[in-house]
Length: 191
Image (cartoon, rainbow, N blue to C red):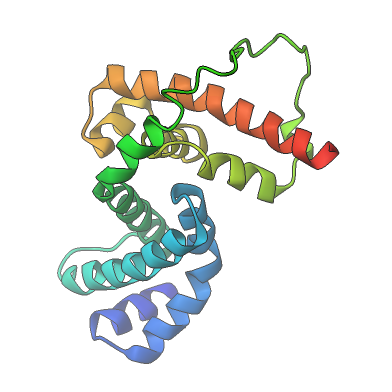
C-alpha cells in the first residue's frame, strides 16, 4: 500500500494496515528506542507504547493533513520516548548518585590526557549504543535530541520542558560521559 492509502486505512482502524506499518517501521523505531532507553526491556516497553500512541494520534488526525508517514512516525515516536524516559523519575536520582561516596580512587576527568583519538567511524554500533545506554537519562535525552536527531538547543529545551542552560549543562556532561563510556568499552574489548 502507498503511504496515503496506509494513513487512510489506519484512520479507519484497519488491522492489516497497522500490521503492515508495524513491520515497515519496527526496525527503525526499535533502534531509536534502544538509543533513548537504558536497556532492552525498557526499549521493548517504549516500542509498544510508542506504536500504540502513534496509531492513536494518526486516527485522531482525520481532518488534518498528515505529513509523510516516515516523518510522522519518527517525530511522534521520539516524543513518546522522551515522555517515557522523563516518566521514570526514580532513575534520575539513583543513577546520578551511585558514585557519590566512592572516595577510594581518585578519578581523572581530563579527556585529552592519554592523547588517544577515538575514530567513531570504525566503532561498532553495539559499543555506541551501550555507551549511550550507560548515561543518566537527562544526559541521554539531550544527547539523542541534539547530537543524533539534530534539534537545536532551544528546540531540545522545549521538548524536555527545561531551561536552555540546563540543557547545555547536560549536553556538556553527556559528551564527556559518552567519550568516557566508549573508552571504558574499548579497554574491556582489548583486555
